Length: 71
Image (cartoon, rainbow, N blue to C red; front, top):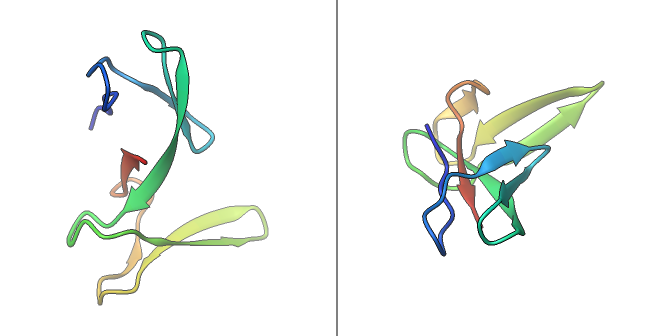
């Protein structure tokens, strides 16, 4: 899934929870969302691991399936 800038629609480069737009020269925070219901996920961090949990009945979500959306 490619992420695009909400202002100019240019592709964004995602890194460390932020997306950078080369065209606008802006950094945008990314929000993890459930691939099933598209609602925000709870981020669980422990011992260096990051997991994602959907509080709307979909349980733990694999990092590979998480949708990241610019906020």
